Image 1 (cartoon, rainbow, N blue to C red):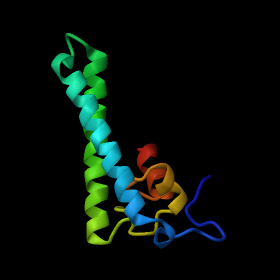
Image 2 (image 1 turned 45 degrees about the horizontal axis):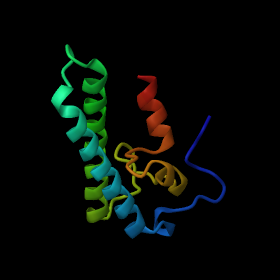
Image 3 (image 1 turned 45 degrees about the vertical axis):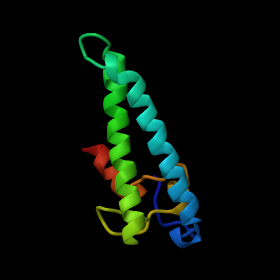
Image 4 (image 1 turned 120 degrees about the vertical axis):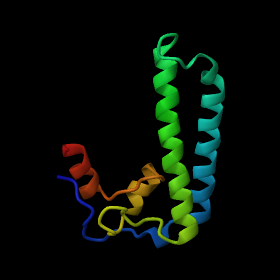
Length: 110
């Protein structure tokens, strides 16, 4: 089982938070572009794939905006469920991660 308690965890303070912010803003802009392109036909009865892609993109953009808020508040890198640290490696792969691996596994089980 994956866990967020390895021998020598890399902490969020070791991440370049300015680079994280830039990456999140780039992903946000990419999401806005996808929505602009798909919105005209994103109706479940007309184009269900566009509809689902738009909905998924909107949810991702909400998570990105929440991550940007956490960066501004100084809480970026803390799990929103347990308050524990989210490994930097997880944040490098998924910069808008809200939960540590253990809490995410718990969410996915239910």
